[in-house]
Length: 305
Image (tube, rainbow, N blue to C red; front, side):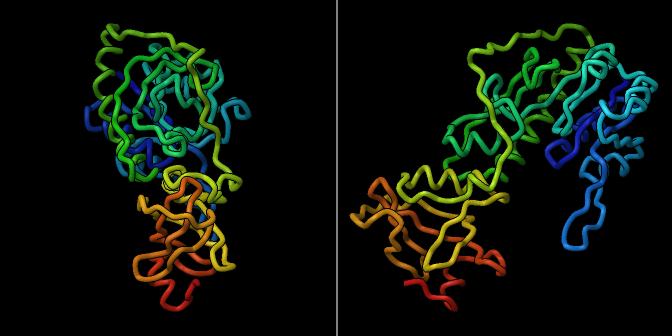
């Protein structure tokens, strides 16, 4: 089977590696153009491009299939039986969906129809979900609305960060992809329409989500912190300094202090009163112009009263 793969970030790499491992003919890889990164703004290839070049697979980097008709012609010339998409970063027009004989399938990091959109891994944590998973669907023109081919579920640990869950789901998605392609090839795959009435949306993240509102419960604030790593990161003003907050712990400790009050600050971290009458302990933070560090290390040179 000739497969064209489309993907860009780290999440997509295990899926590409799974196709390589299973010996499918990779006719080409489409990924986003190199982007400037870090202080030097040096053009940096995507994780998928690095993987593809390592294995000698031709790489194509159109800005947009809609804006570059030649990209569609390139895809047609590759004569794929199947297009596999994982976090590509572009909405594919119908003309692209119509190219492969077996259609285009997408590895999506949620249990569709829940959490359609750009940031499902973040939002399941922000919303305090206890379970998520990966869906492989046949792509349609509507966003993440195609027929479901397969799903794999996994529990979310109460302390799991979005980075940790991201890496687990990437591997779960790759394994699921490896399981369903033979069914597609033999035309035995089952396609189940989504129930649009049950759909929810996971929009892109923004800095407006960062500020911690201490009138919320400790659990909600804990979810906010672990759901916004590494960007935009939760933030809180403590002792007149606006910090990025990276690691916190629920204590269950009861307090009558006003939400947002610093109860203690020392070797165990910074204990702050929350809206549910309990306290949240800040363990890791970053001050403006400083490195990310433990709260205890920061407090040694910058006491908070």
